[in-house]
Length: 194
View 1: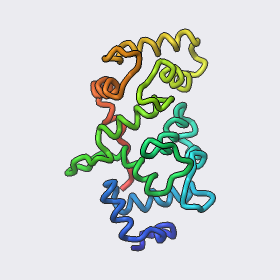
View 2: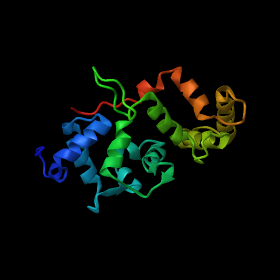
View 3: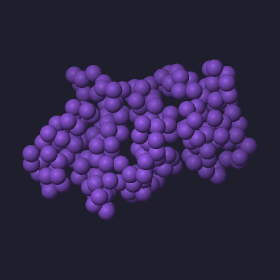
């Protein structure tokens, strides 16, 4: 299938169809994402690293961009050094809003979006968010605009208000309940070009 660019010739029609079924992206969107992936793959290995993703200006200037990128490189609970195109698209599919006449898929469900967000805050990959995790994220986001004591007070208050099980950390269930109050999954939708 010719999609109008040299890079799309590397993807076979069957593969585009499979990726579309897995992710809900249209063939055109897949072709565009593949072009972007190829432009990030400076070594032409068919794999990109976290350093490659950090070359995206929007991620490079985001105070938690590094954590977002790290989340791309965790698959099946294991950290990996590189990802291929399919892994890249599957992660991006988390942020794809459901189409007008389409039910959300597992890949772009509310649960998938919230699990991705949870992984950004769970610095230690412990399955819970601790005061130290919150403090680390606050430091990344706020920097030196507040004192260490002020940041620690915010982290402790957040933990107290969110820790429904009162076990000293925020479980995924606590996180999900809190963020569902503000429809966080809707905020995490990204419009991909058609």
